[in-house]
Image 1 (cartoon, rainbow, N blue to C red):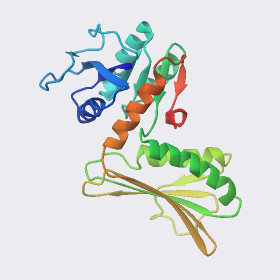
Image 2 (tube, rainbow, N blue to C red):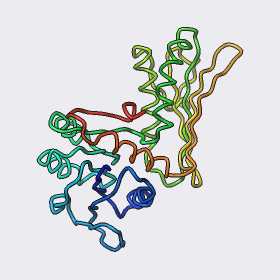
Image 3 (cartoon, rainbow, N blue to C red):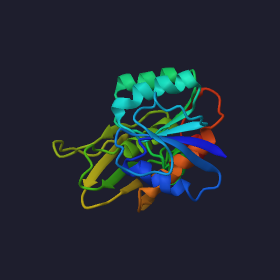
Length: 250
């Protein structure tokens, strides 16, 4: 059985993961880390990862971005693999993460959903056929009204997967309101919609002459991200040092 430390255990995602793990016979949470001590858990909770002295196989991180440096250094010192789900990392923090991956196994992905990561693989296959055939590519993403960033990290990751598979020909276009001209052949349009309580919708449109192919992913609950993080934790435990992502899990 995989023994896991939940970093950021009392946040929304941390609690969702904690509840899902209770019904999973292959993984257990042996400790949590959170400065918020107001939530009752069935495992010990520490204020800081440096205070946590419980033996484990892997850490799952849904904490604050400000805590990532301490987490990486502590995990490196303890030879402890870590699944980094925290978003909004700076370039300096990402560089720190990449450097630490030379010492321990680290898995980081723009989206923890297994479905989204399978979608990335499908898109890479699709663009190799549809790109040379002259199909235009557009991405439309929709999220809840409270989301601060646009476009979403997932939309950008989908665009990057397409562009990489096609040998980087596409230029990302986020706004056409100030330009009065025809669409360029190598534009990749990315549009953002914000409203209501939409968890996360992503449509990738390949528009050709007289036909359109659309790849879609709908997240109806944040549980899809929690389930992906749990699958990643099981996968990463015991792995050699290196930088992994959800495509390895898929």
